[in-house]
Length: 103
Image 1: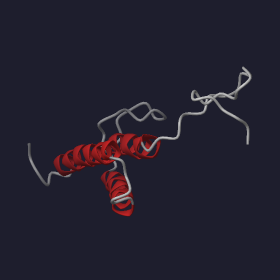
Image 2: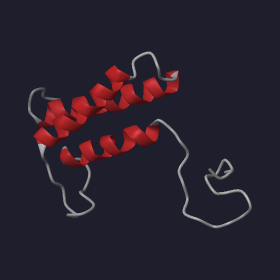
Image 3: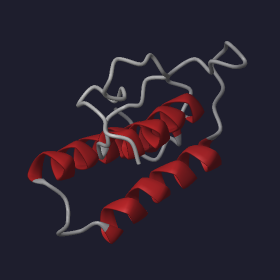
């Protein structure tokens, strides 16, 4: 293993690809963003249009719920709050899109 600085770049000034810091949000954000795309709330970056796929969105939400269950009691308070906020938003949007709740 090579010695690294806090910015993810190797010590010694060599220029290499940027490595993001090890952070819990880097696990949550890709699933959260994908769920927003599948809920039709954010444009699909590949298709460049709004694409709604509620079963896929539900699966992504379920994955985040599974992550929450499996990390229960092992997260820092701010990580737990972040995950809860993401799940709350996604569940609310899902219920609205699936016409289970009307807002």
